[in-house]
Length: 108
Image (cartoon, rainbow, N blue to C red; front, top):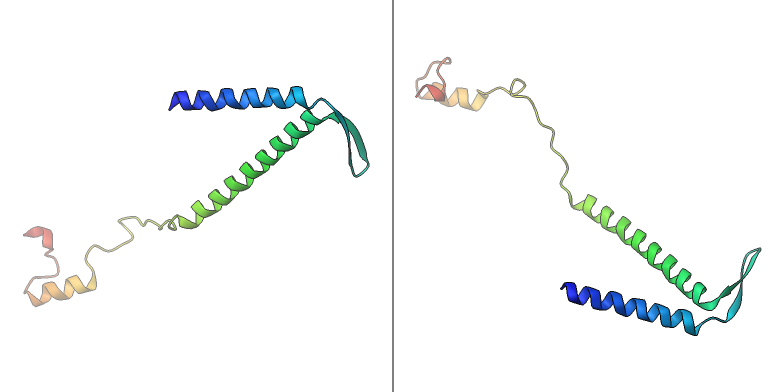
């Protein structure tokens, strides 16, 4: 797997160098009131980088939103002192069996 990664890294570096050396022609760009003259290679590399970064940011935001939707809501935990251990149904069933209210199931 590491060799494949190195292969693609070297391939990208060679392609970038070929792009830079073959596209040295100056081009004029104008964005609103800003006018600039740049080599074509710089323009291509910068627009590709900006597009990649915007795509990565939008993908990260989308994944974060999807992950947040999939998470179950956190349940509120209650202290053991707040909830009674001997509920009404347990008390009624123990009376039917002949136990006194002071006896619990742990006394068995």
